[in-house]
Image (cartoon, rainbow, N blue to C red; front, side):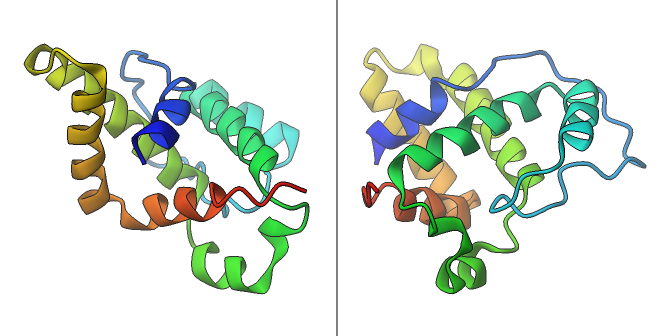
Length: 138
């Protein structure tokens, strides 16, 4: 699992914390769908992390069959997982890496530690990524 997260990490931006207007509802659509361009650009303007979520979402398509995101099983299991959830996950992962890197000499040890924390806090995202990386190339 560490290798999968390393791939995702490569898309992360260790950006400064953006102040998000909590009254604006962004990222609230299923990660199985794409927002329209105007909506996505609005999200990115408010929080640049959504550009990285977009990159990761496109990247996932390289590892699944064309109809993966439309399958009823996937829709049922992950339909409630949102773009916002993935953005929060990426930010938390980057934060944990940053805060703990001084405690680990080896990158793999650090990644395993952060992965273990993320499994507890974000099990649905871990399951989603695992399902994608079953390597069902089309």
